[in-house]
Amino acid sequence: MTLPARCVCGHTPGAPPQNTGVIPDEWALAYIEEMAEIEAQSQSAPADGEQP
Image (cartoon, rainbow, N blue to C red):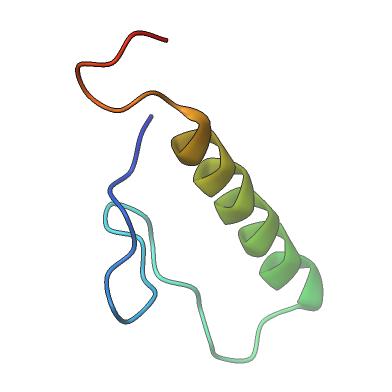
């Protein structure tokens, strides 16, 4: 799954926004790790029309 680039506010369209309320650290870290993986995959994926 390739998500569009981040908007000016830092939110990745198509992904849920990070919960900035009081949540367990493990949940926050899991969100950060998942979003980092998605972002890394989208940066390494070829652009539309390019060959892999």
